[in-house]
Length: 111
Image (cartoon, rainbow, N blue to C red; front, side, top):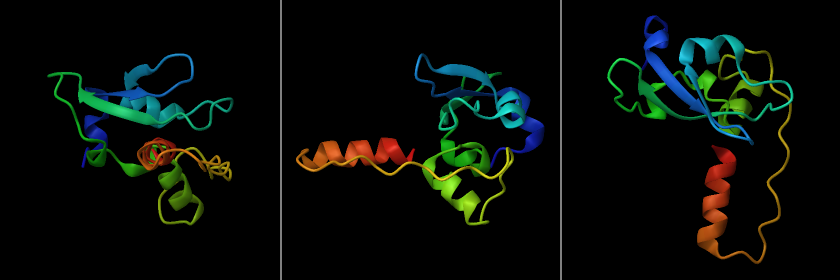
């Protein structure tokens, strides 16, 4: 698990509808998603000093901002660093799509 003392050496890539954004984990931890884009989430991370990739599982989960972590925050099972997240919109109707496409969309949706 990445410790807070390491946040300045971790660069995260955050999803955004226009273009993914790279920033220090320390900045993301302080700022979080914008009110206009509450579902922005960390999609990857690496060490600033070495470029070594960091698995998302190694990051503090409360900063991922995935549908799963947002649900855990609403249930009180995970800290909510930017305040309690609002309820998330439901998964779109996937009827008629091939199973492998449905699985991919669900994985992407859940983060």
